[in-house]
Length: 145
Image 1 (cartoon, helix red, strand yellow):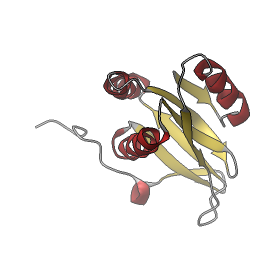
Image 2: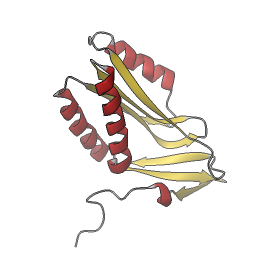
Image 3: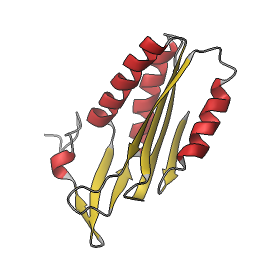
Image 4: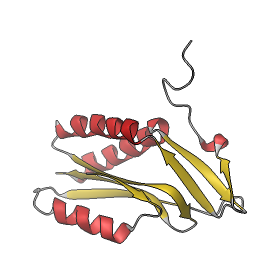
């Protein structure tokens, strides 16, 4: 399940939908990661730009990889502005056993942070400022020679 939302995520609603879908899958563990915007350095919100086609391709690669292990993956992310205290990212792994699920949710989130085509901006005093110091250069990005 891959979902992009405008603005903050409604975590209880999304989680309930994922849980309902997982109830018929005969799995023992549904593990989630919820990213929440925090107030660092007087940030009032974060704003996200997404290349949805590339993000979907990244997700589909993970989905196929995990499917071979009998594991399902869930993903929701915000585009646009998300205020402090609100969620912008929710990821989930559904697996037969918790140990595998715990490893995979960590691997998924770390790979997301390194490779997802999402650009993050701090919002301070109504201005969007690219969060360069918290960004990772995407493999293959840039001007071709």
